[in-house]
Length: 394
Ligand code: A3P
Ligand code: MG
Ligand code: MG
Image 1 (cartoon, rainbow, N blue to C red):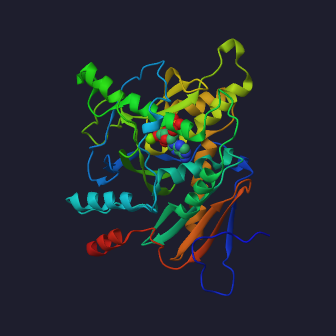
Image 2: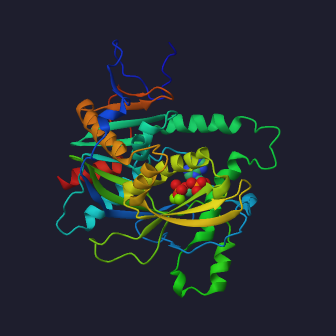
Image 3: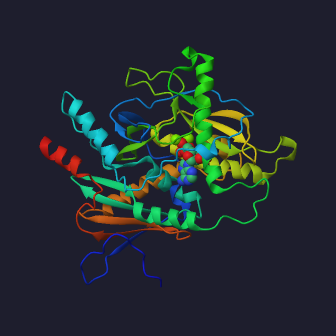
């Protein structure tokens, strides 16, 4: 067998660490009504500014406006200001925002949950049952009754580096686009669909000017929600693309966030084949899980041609997607995803019971999530700043 590539230093012990396994199949054990879920509620938020610097505010919130159909999403590729993480971000910004929130709370109430992680980690977990090629690598640590989960950044950046050093295919079909271009047009779609001011009160020339501005993914607005899967409570942080209308002041009112996505246009109905619908509905699983987790109620899909021309727009209600797919190709079941995640979190609670860093890995075509303790300490998963803040509160 291949030795396990691990960037985290191994535990100094003679015995190999105990490996705990959670098989994904068979899925029928997750069928039926879904575990009870609470509607996610925002507890904190933060922004990254145009230099990707952290800010305790709403400065990077944008509003949605329908982008011009016919636009070429390839435009501006050469001037794209692409932010790529060079250092391990851990959970630092999320924890900074939580500490900030706690410091403002008059009752001094702590923002506590069984799990704290980025939304992206939960998306990977929730969608694993229906992705035969799913793979992930995360680290988890138990601190003061909470399990903190982060992405295995060293292994992700290693696989990205390997990907980008691979020479691009020598002969691209005229319809084919490079990976970099395909990733760019998702951001270009956002530039065309989002502005920092309310569209109804923004002069049209200002809107046009904004739409023609240089595309950058440095700025972001992140929402941190409290949610639960069955008996397990979670604090999740993730990027929200924009608002459909101003953010309500009443914390009990759902926030009208909108998630923006691009997808390849479907052939006209007369030429549509089962596999076209299947491809799209498979994509909807990711869109749904990602939005569901943060309580994002609407998803706008920009349909584009193979060469990146925006051909049409459609707005979906997030909560209607599982039913739509059930009546369609039935290629995934939202209840199974929710029940799987609830069971998995319960199992993780039983497994990560001591302090230390645990690796949580799903290998490609592995079908089994493996958890093993890889070292002592918290591995930087919980920032020093946050540890100090919590200590001060005690
Ligand atoms: P699309 O998903 O429309 O292609 P998000 O939808 O999560 O807000 O991300 C915005 C865009 O970032 C994506 O738009 C895509 O272009 C790019 N992107 C996100 N995650 C990516 C990844 N893992 N690899 C490449 N591009 C990614
Ligand atoms: Mg986004
Ligand atoms: Mg998006």
